[in-house]
Image 1 (cartoon, rainbow, N blue to C red):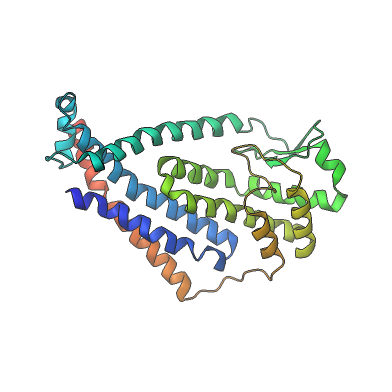
Image 2 (image 1 turned 60 degrees about the vertical axis):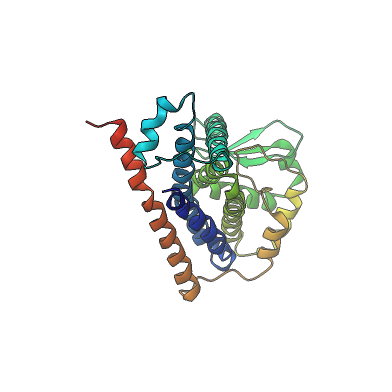
Length: 291
């Protein structure tokens, strides 16, 4: 049981970088969906492994094991687990739960409760971001408005509106929660956040009539001045130099190819590994609720 508990974790974490490595070779929109699906599946495959091992370790401790021993037996962990494995599993579970609660609290706190196309705040500091939530409210400061020409402000607003229209905040929440639960997923989470900014950049290009160089210059100009609140989506977000470089190149054209088939195959394998854990969770739930 011990080895099989870690098979999905090892396999999923190994497959994730391979999937992520191809994210710049497809359109940002497609890449964002691929990376979101990958994060969800990797988390589903990996987290039960950590929880089960942590539960098995606690269930065999001398002083409190008698309270949780039935849990360990329910998932097939009848033998004591080494502290070298058990302690990190318990720490990851506890700390991850705390971090996930903080992410959710921050998300709820930042959510826009009322719809408003654009909110202009009386701040001299340049600010531009989109609040999470169905309202998708865009916030800009008077400092930003004063430093931009009219067509440059249109680019900023088009970028920020894209975040709200396509509900990028949901994908950001997946990225933040995955990273909070399993810090090893941070590289994959950062790739998703970068890709969401690229998606919004391409939407801004469309709004600007296809002028990629103008959008690139505007993003570079704004990024030098704008600060971004935590949990918000903003034009000055992750990876500005790489985003500007991408805008100065021709747009990526979607083509069905061996590359995409390989990506989907890797995602399918990750999904199988995730589903493998469901029978462990089902056994635990059955023991918890025998009726």
